[in-house]
Length: 187
Image 1 (tube, one colour):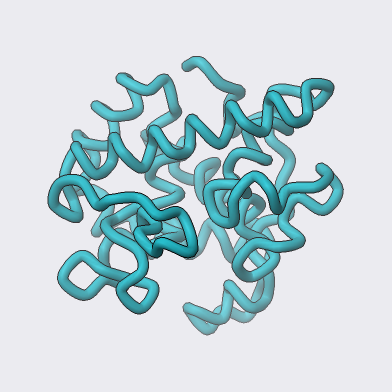
Image 2 (cartoon, one colour):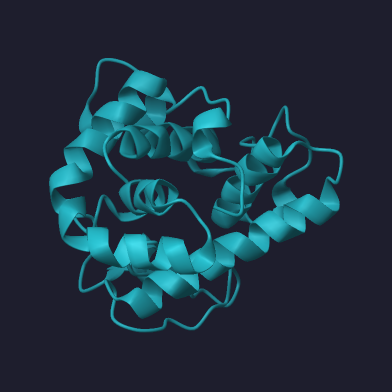
């Protein structure tokens, strides 16, 4: 793949707030792994699409699966393909709010077209973070790009506080931990 491996990215996993989506008695990497496993049955039906888009974009399929898990719980949290009170579209929750990402939804909510669009947005953010922080390691740039996918690159100010402005204060850490679980489980 063209970017750092998620297996080499340091992570603290899900915050207590995020873990309470599933009423877990723990937080951290264990909580992220549990939530990824919970979503794995639903995720299986998207596996070939995830692998196809991952190959085309040089992004590990495990990372795409992890974002799908975090953003839409593998589609389980969506209503007719929409989430975030109608502000985000599809499995990877492309931000269509004009005051947010301002993207135009492409394809059906669970299509290759949607996954390609969302993965392209992620790749763009990784590129922006790479330019903004050229001295960061490739693993740090990947993690910063994941955080930017959630909140925009203008909200990433340092590696030590990469998740300071993300949803739950843990977005990149949770996504990385979920991606590591998916990678270990065949993605």
